[in-house]
Image (cartoon, rainbow, N blue to C red; front, side, top):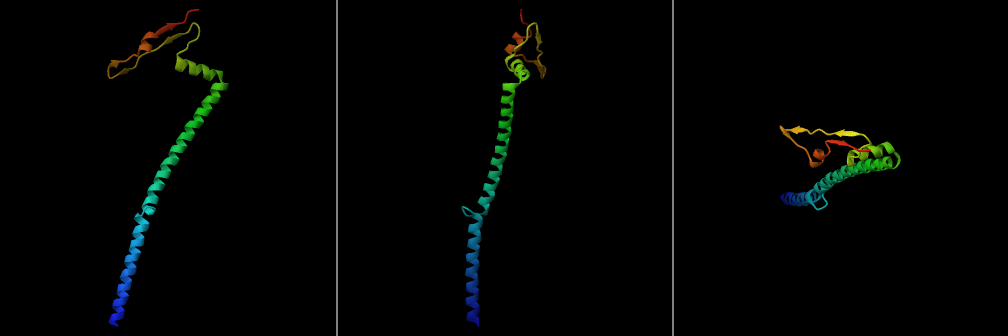
Length: 118
């Protein structure tokens, strides 16, 4: 009986070692569970980035549509981005104070009190 017990113990130890190697390979291998977990996290990051880009794309498409069809929006954009003014309109620009220092850009200094002639 001692011989059967030794053989069974030896076989059990080999099977356990083999099973341990398989578990290690499944967990830490090139296509194992840890790599799968990392890839899933990376996929989630890319999906969030795609959602942000789709939202930005939709906003740009809406802006294009407004620029094509809405004259008031075109005027608003022209005033804001190009500094355009209507006839006999006076623009006042005030500088903001940060940390006790007044900052004015060259454009702000040049256009503080602009009156468009007739």
